[in-house]
Image 1: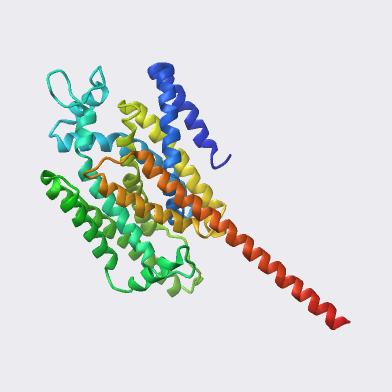
Image 2: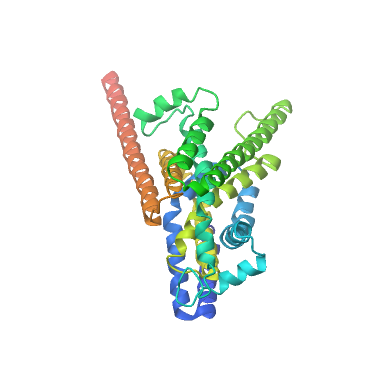
Length: 373
């Protein structure tokens, strides 16, 4: 309850706010959006946990509090509005007016032929998908091309790790995927903007991840010089700040596609902020903290691998959606499949290790009995 208590309270308050705002229908839509966000974002929570466990408890609390504000109002409300007013050349006031006053019949255009908020946001999807797809694809390659003691899909992870010894291979492969998407998937009019958005995604990843690693390395060096412990320490200060930024960009890459998909349920930005933001984002963060505090990633060692494979699949799906519609349920099921498979194989591995230890203990007891005899 210490971890999920706040999320439960926020959920109740959000549902009450939806009920007051739009009646029973709004309450049901808000609940559906919250469930959708939680069910489709478990892979996000696992990856967040793998990063969050490197941060101090103070910054974990910042992620759970300040990070939620950014997730709700920044990623689920302000960011879509910003995309509309920037790409369509509208003022922020006009973009918000379009968002809160959609066409009465649910059409994508008004009677005078002007586009609705939903249409403007959907039209901007190729650029957003290119940014998020490139960011997540580079994240996936950076993980999968690194040598690790434990591998999940060893038949492919070990050869890829050997290839990863080539400098900047992850960036090369990501840019290659981006070029393929721009050349063969994007519409002719969108190619240049898709390439630019994708390059910005790659640049953002390199910048934020690099700064976080730089300051974390400096903290290690300072501690070693002071004669501190040699064990891996939690990131604090500047290093934790950049890890925090990294998590927020990662959340944006995960969440925007969900915002687009939410329009299949409702185009009301208030309900989207309540359902996807307050309810969904709070529970995703609580799940993240739960995974860190309970040491779940250490107990089920393949979960992190499964999450990154899910990220790789989501990145490819995002790049495909630049020119082809893919139902959001597909990307969600892909993530659930990878996470589920990783969890099951982790359980099997743990049982085999436990059985092996029991066998060793039995052999030891037998040896002792024989020697006594």
